[in-house]
Image 1 (cartoon, rainbow, N blue to C red):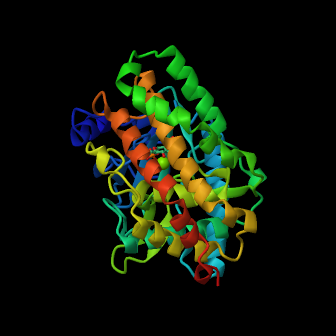
Image 2 (image 1 turned 90 degrees about the vertical axis):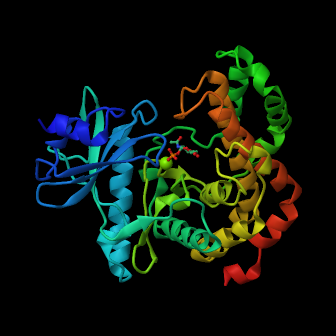
Length: 373
Ligand code: GN1
Ligand code: MG
């Protein structure tokens, strides 16, 4: 049985892959190989090799988080089609410029059954993603890729896309939810996080500022980690932006911010020595150097004025998201140990404290005229 074969390959810690789901996609079965890819902390992902040697990415979508899978795949369809067209016009290889999902037997890019929602995309050969700690070079390239992504999609009407994760970056709502969790203390963990809770509550005004400013709605990626950029294995040139689940209408500063939050911190998101967290200004500069020139022809004055506030807001928001989940008993993010989400919270708080001190330096870099030529 295919299922048993896969089960063996994935090891006993993983659930067996859904055989019925696989047969709904135009791929040659039985599979030759299955490799679990464990980078994401939300979906379950396998690199599979079909009977004819073609490789694909097979994913089970986490429907607890992505409830509107139809809307999500429709967004992805619109966006990837648009990028393929743009790529073809500008001499880039369309099949390497973005992900290409295969239609299931129901003619949509998604197959759902009682076990979950599944999708398959072509594996882009001879590519790697930037894994591990980013370098100034990789971060600059990631900035260019995510900036180009926004620019490529700037002539697409953002209202065509559904808001698949409603209020994803609605910081005031995140704050309200966090305050509710603090009040109800469902996992009885409040005592172990009192200082963190007080600090974040003291910054509610700071975290709410951005939400009061009117900014253009764009098609944004919303998860701009360097590991979401595919590069050519040989030339190391960035090719495509992946992990398109959170693509939806959003603000330009969010895509500037999240990468900086993730990579311009001295420590990784779940570093246990969280007291070493802080802003690596050279890394921040590197991302700005890639991102800003890529969007310079479309960025508005209001957007320039809110780049840094966007970064501070996103770090703040992520800190309360992690802390909320810690206090709730780890219901959202996958965790490996009971304090995992608290550690994550503290790496964000360390970064945030530093950014609030160095705001002027950050502003000067974001407004450097040489980036806007
Ligand atoms: C989640 O699973 P991953 O790494 O793609 C989260 C992001 C967070 C990130 C923190 C849909 O992304 O918003 O910034 O974890 N995605 C969702 O590591 O909640
Ligand atoms: Mg993601």
